Length: 186
Image (cartoon, rainbow, N blue to C red; front, top):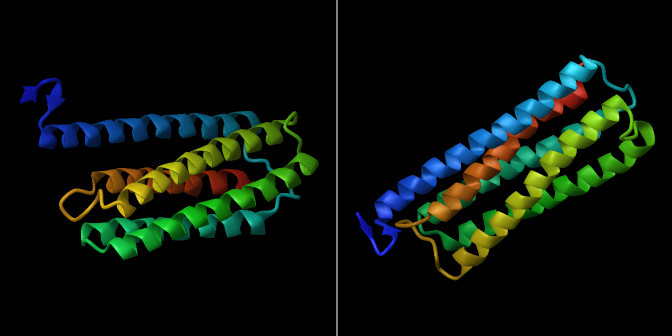
């Protein structure tokens, strides 16, 4: 089973899968703690000036990126390298569009509810934490795109793509909880 410090490929794959799910679980606890803190400190209050249309728009962009990420994974699983590269590129672009929306959100938020207010603190912490995860997801997608372009993945071996796409879906699901927490609860 172990030769020269390396695990057999099926054992290594299983270890990678378990490791990813443990990582995602730990991230879920982190987001849950921050969301719970928002409700503990503020109850269900939110500023009326909050830009809900912008929040909804960036939410739709992020949800669309989950579809293109899924299509990228499905494409590489069927040896469609061109479809993989196209869909992973679109996913990265949609992530960038989401982050651009966050920048607009932050600039409005700084004016309306500064970070030294209770709502501002909760807002900037949650959105900033999530934006960091989107950024790291985009970097990971860029890495698998580069590896995929060089032929690293195919229908027989695409765990790297699958793992990154699972992380991307987690980031999207986290936003599904953050959006109503910040924008809809009142």
